[in-house]
Image (cartoon, rainbow, N blue to C red):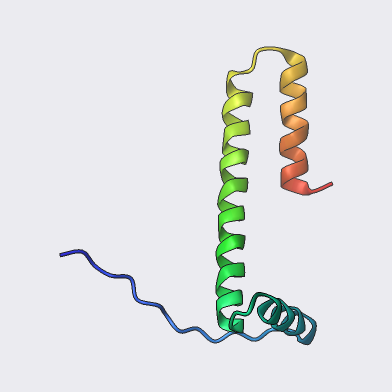
Length: 85
């Protein structure tokens, strides 16, 4: 018998500017603020997963790259992802 995932109720505190933006988004999309917050969290988590996948892909490319110019470019991109800039 499959297990159903049940929603988990969480309480979060948002700064006033963020709360206003969430309310505006909810009103514009005709959604509840809870739904907008849940969607934003899911979008953020998905983006983080994509960044991690991209980062690990670059590490694999660096390990297999033999061209010094390619290695330098990949190292620079990894540094930018790690340290910003």
